Length: 247
Image 1 (cartoon, one colour):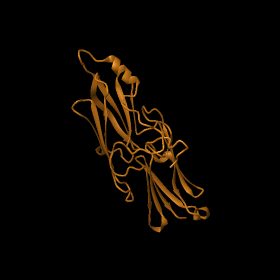
Image 2 (cartoon, one colour):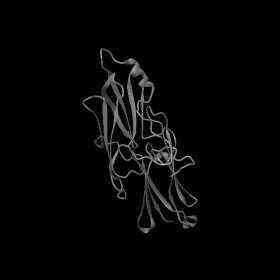
Image 3 (cartoon, rainbow, N blue to C red):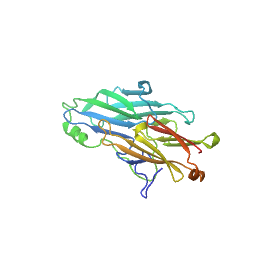
Image 4 (spheres, rainbow, N blue to C red):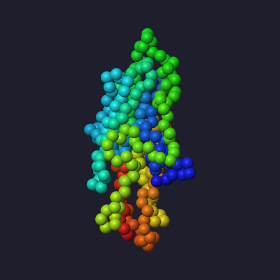
């Protein structure tokens, strides 16, 4: 984990070093067509539609998202479940449809279409216009600091973005959450008795930007200076898994 003098760059992930912060991003795409774009990190969740459920409640003002991240390795401590919601804060429109919900590399992206409704005779265009330009959240979370925040939508499973497990024969298993990263975005290197992992999650769709990650996955003993370890890794659903074997 990388922490500078002022703490972690992003409280949503101890390994993030650049790019938009927090577990989610939402933005109104325009006033003429009031659609909202949502990006939500769900590390471990795959592209299978059966693992993600997106529904709109009867009021048509709240969107509920449920997702399952199964164990993909016998060394994972447990599967993870997510459940969270997004709410329209204005009173001049309602959710009419949810379009193209897709999970790629542990990140859910979707478009929420809205329809104006009449309240007291006509939609409140002025309020809606302001909400289109401002973040509609009631409270802006702290985005940098000393303590990493757990995923607010995690309902079951390990909250940490890092998992370390000692295996037989002095091998080590490490899990790192780097949502948005794929196998081609990752570089693993052994330097100065440690295993470093660097990743780049590219900008996709309406994301405000890409994200960079950097992690010290494990510290090694003195023997690593003589015989470097053998490191195997794979990246699936925004999760990096490493097996570090003595040289």
